[in-house]
Amino acid sequence: MPRILVADDDRTSRELTAELLQNAGHTVSQASSARETIARCKASLPDLVLLDLILPDRTGIDLLGELKALWPGLPVIIVTGYPEIRSVVEAMRRGAAEYLVKPVDPDALVRACDAALAGGPHLPGPSRAVTFPLTEETQGPAWPPPLGAPKPLREVVAAYIDHVIAATHGNKARAARLLGISRETLRARLTKGSRPACSPWAPAQARARRA
Image (cartoon, rainbow, N blue to C red):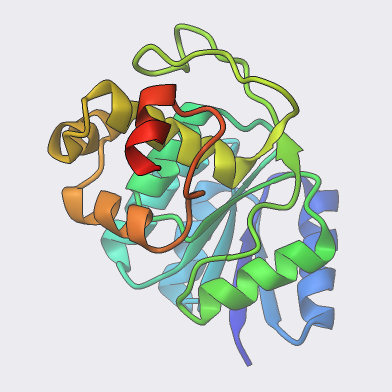
């Protein structure tokens, strides 16, 4: 039976998530801090960590980096109620299996966990549509405001990658450096089907090149 560690400082959220995953057939343990998460992993390594982005002693992104450094094959899903473009890209760079936004649909959460345990992406996409405050702090290189309705999180990330590639005139090596990921990771993201064939936010010239 797969073992999942739920790391969240919000007791109510943590216990509800644990109950949901137990009912789905998983063995679940809980942690309320980064220190406790590391300690539990060292005592008995789980098959998956469900990690809140904000913990009392460290950020989830920082802890994600340490978890992947200690146990490279350990899948980690980031969950947050405060999504930002920069944290999505950083989570991707550090090897997160998925990035979900609270409140997470229960079925979507179970699907994401099952996919991560199986070693694959969560193909149906994130659990809810979100928009981001696109400020000088979060926008990255010349990122324009979003157009139209809010976009699912995976589409937001895909559009951001699309924009960076277009801004570098298709230079994927430079785009990877700007995104803070390896060229191999970028190539995998572009070929896995995790981004739309044509993002509605991509510059017109980039869409024309793909037409």
